Image (cartoon, rainbow, N blue to C red; front, side, top):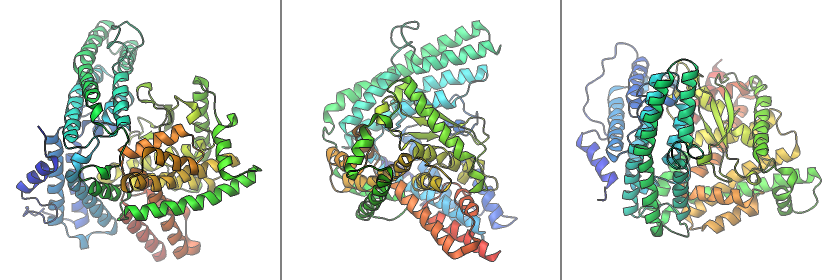
Length: 617
């Protein structure tokens, strides 16, 4: 039976009398100190309440509460969370006087309001969401999470690990229901995305103990992880071999009787429903309520009110500007020919690729690590705040690795007990050219995502919901892209081809402005989008097609990078102009990174407050 998600959620919120915009009549909070102190105490309480919704988030923050649980992905759980946000916002607005708050407390108030209103607004578009797709969706992300973030140091940790394996079965059944409901509403990701979900899910349940028996063939990733944990516990003397054998059998049952069948149900339904998908992919505007959903998505991803047409035109202008800079570097290399010919040269010449084997993959990881380590030494010249957490560069696990797919970052813990990880897809080295490697390393590592996320998690004196409150794409991706350019100021890109790779990376983000809006607002096909990418970038077609397919299933997200970068650059230029000789690059960067992830409008207030404080001093 089809569930009207938005109607159910909003009706439930209304039934509580907690209209998020008007606010209910709630008991006044007794505040014996200043409004700012009371509000900060209230934020801490709300953060602890919010954390209760997600056992996985607790784990990602280094906590071992609810360590044996997987999150609830049902519509009822989504309804409960929206209600909580609506009630929390109403309570805050009814009990705290904004004008009596300090400047930083006003930032916190505005940030909480932004998150609450975003959560409530999202209820309008739950039926427009693609639940399972090829871009980090739960079917691949949940096993990866268990393998990379669930540490096993004791017998109880191992028991929790096994319980979570079983919990993956419940989670996948819940997510399948959501996908089926949205499909009934006429919302399905394109056929290539179905193919990916089927293939990735199949890889997860291939190998021992799913196929070939416990001892037959190569182990599945989760079985290998299980065996590794048990061997470590036995070796350390934490458990006996007899107990390890018991736990191994429990894990086998959880995998084969709870998790495996649920994944098979996903595979079966997606295979059966495949004929109902669009063989020629369409943007979301072609789907029910799609135009409104795309407008909403752009607002969420850019945290601005820019329209699709404005973003498209900005992208065209940025592509033209960057082409001019590319021609300058091309001339400096001594290449004789057109820019398009230079694209083909860097796309095809063997000197720009590592070998197509395991050694080549390791060479890529080693080179990225070298660039990050070299630039990390110069961070104190440009930043006052420095991350404490370590950083590792790793290859993506085989069951979710995709040729030419985008690299990504996964945060460590606030206490530094687990490092941040920069993941690279290295299954096809011909899709991983060397020239943009350096820029990508800075983007994902230092001074990019790792630095931004780690500093946020390690902040003191800032409400936890800001320090550990999650990712805002325009801010996080904008900072990471800004970091690619900043790295040139810091001494990076000594090789001209790497400097060209920096522009290649920035060009790709400019292309995204054009292509994302082209797909979802102007009706571009996949092939039209791929062709535009190839005409304006040296990235190989494998990468271009993988990226374009990404934009189809994550509408609006690709626009956040360039929008965020441009705004940070504008704010820096404003600060430099107003402060003149008093401008301190470390102070500016500490301001941008010192308040956690924020929408661009709030970031502007933070920078303006910093400028005013410098002037006052």
